Every structure is written in C-alpha cells, then in structure tokens.
Figure 1 (tube, rainbow, N blue to C red):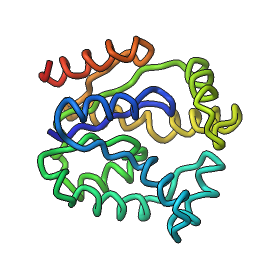
Figure 2 (tube, one colour; figure 1 turned 90 degrees about the vertical axis):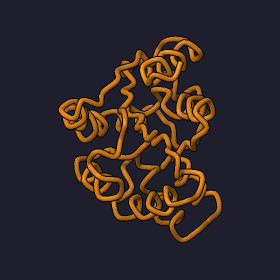
Figure 3 (cartoon, helix red, strand yellow; figure 1 turned 180 degrees about the vertical axis):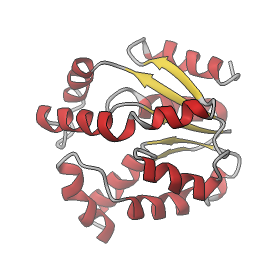
Length: 182
C-alpha cells in the first residue's frame, strides 16, 4: 500500500504516519526527518538545507527527489510506504508520478486543522526552527503551494479527509478504517 499524508505543518502527519506505518508493517518515509538527519549529521546535503529550513521555505525539488528515489528503492519499501512531507508542490507531484507512476498511490490522507491550532501545537514541540513567525510562514507557503495539490488528488479519486484535531488514537483508527485496514 502506497499512501501519501498531506496537510499543513504540525497537523499530525508525522505522528500518524509512524503509527499507521507500524500497524500496516510498511515504512514511514518523511522528507522532513531525512532533512533533519542530514543537518544533524553535518552532511553536505545537511549544510545546504539547514538555512532553507530555518527560513521555513521548501528544499529544492531536485534535492528532495533524489533523496526520495534512494529511500523508496530500499528493501523495506518494496511492499509500500507512507509518504509524509512530499509532494508539496505541483512540480513535486510530477516528480513523484515519475518515480512511482501517476497511479502509484493508493490513497491521499488529508489532515484538516486550523492555523491557530497549528501554531499552538508547533510551538509546544520545542524545535529550534519553530518560531511563531516561521510557523505562520510555513502555513502560508502550505496554503499557496500545497493546498492546490488537493484538487489533483481529488480528481484522481484518492482523497481521504481526516480531522487532525481529534485525539491521536481516534485519528489513527479513522485513517486505518478509511484505508480499509481497521
């Protein structure tokens, strides 16, 4: 099963992707986690993306696509995966289609959460790159660049909307049920 989790930053995608991936026995592939790993390891890639991430902007597609290509080629992803953090732009949808085919996703789970709830939630995480201004900028970038992707996936019949403000366990069960895995 190949599933994309999409929604604004802080909506719970990472938490839910890890929980659902474990239940389904497939990997959670998070571009944000991959970026943070490279930054903390001080790799060449990490140095390039660090300033981009601190500004709240998106890492260039060519960097993200190459990392993703390598990750989904690993053995544990052969039976499927949950993508979290990619694609975020129309260009990335095309890149993902190039990697797995335009019919390569089984479902797109959309997390629905309001901006003020997201700011409060993200400030509580305590990450150094999570300031109120950066969070609000990320939300704005999400609205401008990522929300339009919902129409692409709606036209493909893949959207599964989920209330991201429900309790964690309830959100997990709703996702599994919507994916036919409860």
